[in-house]
Image 1 (spheres, rainbow, N blue to C red):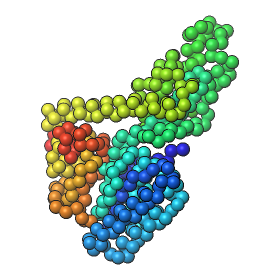
Image 2: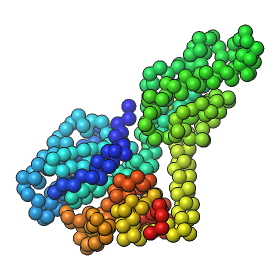
Image 3: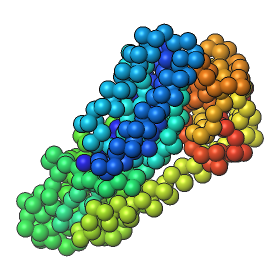
Image 4: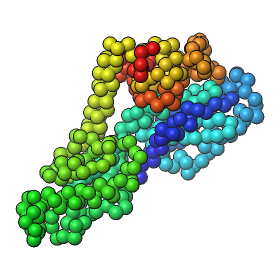
Length: 373
């Protein structure tokens, strides 16, 4: 089983909307190897002390600071929680609440303190989670796997999934000749393969419903194109693992899937860059923080690329979107780029957390606008 907690879009919105006298965001490198997790627990304590120092300097009420510290101290002491981890951990704490997300991505350890949470690194984990489902499909067997980054893949139990084509259709083999002329030869086998593919697709629907995780098909021969024709999951990737999956282990299938997933992410970025170039000629892009903050405030951003590692401390006016830069990142200021991300996300924009080298012009952000501003 993979111990991953990726936030849904509604959870992201909820986190973006939180405002409190103290919001502490901690990102921590962890490990799925339980016997090596103690170092991460110690590091979380170190980051807590760093946050406490900022909050004390900012004049937070001692009782509120104690309540926040108790939340994180209890988490550090929870042996059962630390037993099941992934590659990174995100912790979002206020004096009144605490939320955690276990992530497959390896994120930089950091702490941010403000009156709102710092969410760009978490956005990165959702933008390119290096996660996928793999459907290993042949006439003889069916498996659904789930993979995350460099963690071991896991088999997903799918209620009602056929074990193989022949038994699913009540036959000894899919090559049986039927009494009806249409069911003879290769044409008849195609008919039965389509029936089998429909059963597989129907079994997958409840498991994949509402998900946006890419699905990679591992299949050969006629099975691959026939399933692609009948598939109802909108995130099936066009590129397949064109090797017979029957004798491949879960690890081997995941290894073959990773380059496909990497190419899929690269194609997404290329498409956004091409659209950015086109919209630039139409005066519908900006990399200026002031313009982007105003556009985000008034819902004018269609697509946003944001550097997850940049930090521009300051404030963004709630009504006008005007920005105020500050020299010191204290418990009052927050990351302006992160605030732009939140406002764009809340207005329905497509928002991707990326590295600076993936942004046109290598700036803090690049926004494609819904209309000229």
